[in-house]
Image 1 (cartoon, one colour):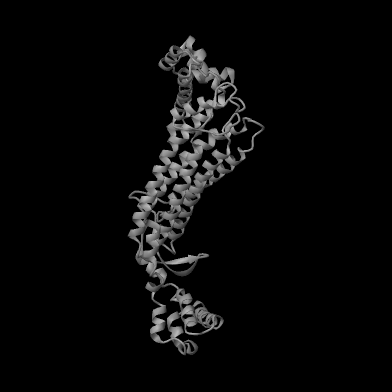
Image 2 (cartoon, rainbow, N blue to C red):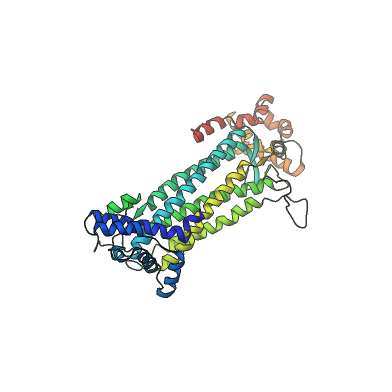
Length: 421
């Protein structure tokens, strides 16, 4: 991924655009075919020489075209013919983004594959669900992973859309009017490059496209952080339902040899913040002066390499994290029983209502016994069985059914079918 954004490849992409234009103009009879052939055979550049020239002229595209001209010779008068700098820069950037996006899409697919595999592995492993950080009702660990899979798949669709939004180039000139080259020439050049022509442009391709792309990457990062935070919570000592793989010889703390810290998850959480910051910068780039100013350029030299490299890294780290995640079903079972059955309060309420008790009265009866468990300890089921008002409505068999987690999880298979088909 990093090589896509290095100067050598950047200038090569500039050259790819320039040569596609020269070739097209030769086909149209605008540029002599022998000059175009000479440009194609001799065109080259030196990054060091470009840097040297730029230090004097203070213009990177002029430095680039000068370096190429030194390789080509007299035929170079037809190089960069009819173009403005942004024709080259924006079109070449689209090519770089396409290359970067291919890697990111492969990363997303790998994460989806890992999530699917582990979701099915833990499909029937019952765990407590938590809302507000407090025990709620039973779920399964596989459902957590299935939920993440569903979300990442939405990002896959979003990323496809964002990539297509960026798959455009332009050679419409200094203010987008095709003063020197024609729209037909632009269409031909873009076809050669595997891009589409922007329907309308100023001197630049409009930056709402770029903001869409960077914001999509930031959204992906937000989901990766969501996964990482959940794992961080599950690894807490008092929870310990799952934890990051801890390799032989790994050390968690310089002061406390017992520590096994969720360092990968914490790293994912931290770096996701950078992606969100880059998204804000991309949105700030949308509003430029008139047909173009240069305030977006310096920003994009940072946020596009950083965001794509980070996305590649974070997707890989998250996939590896899930792939090697250590899961403790027995601890999940222990935690499920920590509250002595109060997690079935909702099911008990519905059972009472189904027998004709008003919701208000049922809620009062259930909450009364649940609060006693919080305050006194003991078994919620036993307190319910001893409650004379409840016993008047529900038989032993009814109450036994209430405290069966299997009933609450009877639709897991159907959810999996929705997610994975």
